[in-house]
Image (cartoon, rainbow, N blue to C red; front, side, top):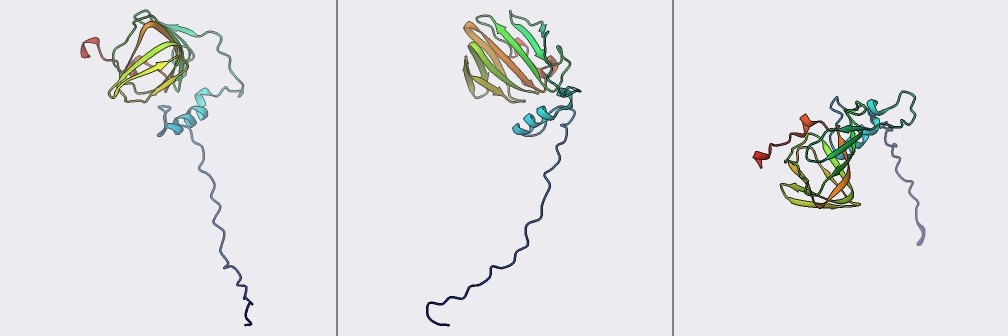
Length: 176
């Protein structure tokens, strides 16, 4: 070979990687839950219970007022008592100044979106202060207690799966 001349080598022949189909989307277990945070969102979006037979939006015109102690007002738009849904519940809640409830260790994740006032969430690691325009997610199995300050509060509670008094596992006031 003369100086400055290079021999071009052909690239090695490599078989392309096999084409793999993505895993099928499956309905969540009967509890309405899957493992992992993103799995819960997928479960919610794919859950048969939430699909309208004609795949059309469903207007909730008559939310249900759910009895609650301590001056708390709960208006459930979606859930076990209002629509019979077990995968998710959505409630609009008003609580008076100074309201609190006992500690609980729920079997559901709960998102609290504060509209007005401040919600205080006591947990094993301390206290979270959730102000208007903020939200908090409490995961299933976490021991928590909700309360508010002197101004009361208004918030939206979203539970996955749907709220139930039996799965909230509230402690008696004597257990504090």
